[in-house]
Image 1: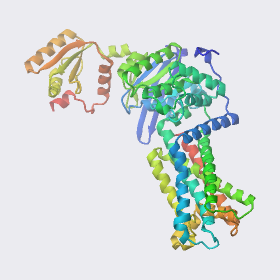
Image 2 (image 1 turned 180 degrees about the vertical axis):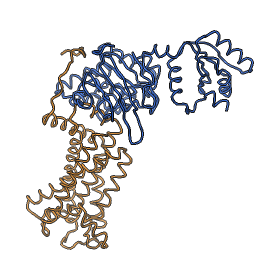
Image 3 (image 1 turned 45 degrees about the vertical axis):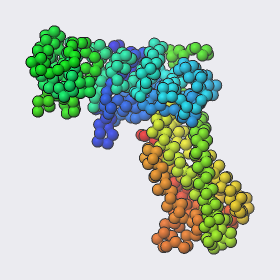
Image 4 (image 1 turned 120 degrees about the horizontal axis):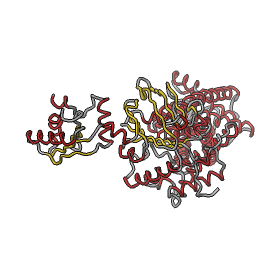
Length: 328
Length: 272
């Protein structure tokens, strides 16, 4: 990555709220015209970082730059470059869709005429023209989310910052929103979005930063992250959920890392560098132990596997099953 | 420009000029938004009017007959100035709720992420309250005139009295804005606003003279701002007693509340 391409830079950012450290030294870079997905669980620090980028919070330590401008010292300039869509659809229910957009346009400093024009443009783009003069209170959840995204586009931002843009959306609306985000990126918008969904990060992001307990614990392209996981995954699905813990104990030591349990899916996954050997060894052990399984196979790792293995390493006290806990 | 053009590359904007003009524009745009939101929430508009009207009817016709205040042959002349100030306090408490609502809905975050003058966001909040306050004050005077209230002074002091009541209401809307910024939660803001306004309105000269109250309560009632503001409004609209003392106290309290609340609210707003 050449220096001139670093459009968003985050260096050593720390932020605490009272005694709670939300960010414990975050470094990130985003190239112009690319999408960075910030991936993490609830409470990992995603929203805090996004709020700092959107000039809503000042970091305790470290610096954040957008287009070479410091977000604290040049906050006003930064604000006219960014569009921010927070976690909630921040639109007024008692105003119409058009009124909401015109309001934002006026606050970007546009004339009444231009604000009206931009509102039209955005409404058309987001297929909200029909509903433009209806109060937002009558909109569906998906329409509100679209309008909220539209509000962040009124100022034609070069950088779009979105905090969990598709949380709570139905699958169809989510796919529509993804397609729309693709379109914006094609036009040159630089995008930073947070998500809890690996599928979303995989689908949208050019690079992913996994954030956990206020730190970036892994970063790279989706493929790089998957490769980092190393090789393939042997996956076993137990017939009986009570056997999941036994399977974890049974398979320990066969793969290139510890087996991981997914209690809800009744699955146990095992990373491996030698797919056939591990699969056969696992099959033998399962048969000898007489555990009934519905499925047994080898597949390429998904981002879920990467995420689970990464977050498990950093939080050993997490209440998922580790081999030690299972034998105890 | 064509509607098809959404060319980001062609959009290297210059930064929005900042200054007094931008501040005024932002304030007006946001004040209009705040007023539209309240106007289109009919229960707010109606609630703002119904409560004080009930109080007028209750105290004029139910309790009024047995309340006698020295110097006021007609109780309604004593009552209406009290109701006007009560209404401005109860009305102002809805500021706390609106501020908390905008914060919790993410609307405040959106406004703060725009190249808006941040001071304009709070100024617009309180200006919208002032417009609403002027409306309810006018309404209370009209209702008062219908049930027998009369002014007994010349126009300049009457207008001065109303001006003081509005100034006090405006100062209180900054106080409630501050409360809303601190508690951030709609339910908590509603409760807190009630807890703050209730003793100020009722442990005061709002409905009756403080003379009949027990000593400790009278001390509180005579010292607190609502009593001073109501006494000033009464003196100026009814020509009863000397207006100078209550007017000075009322102005000092109002300006004090305004300056302190506005300063703290603005500071608080930077880090919400």
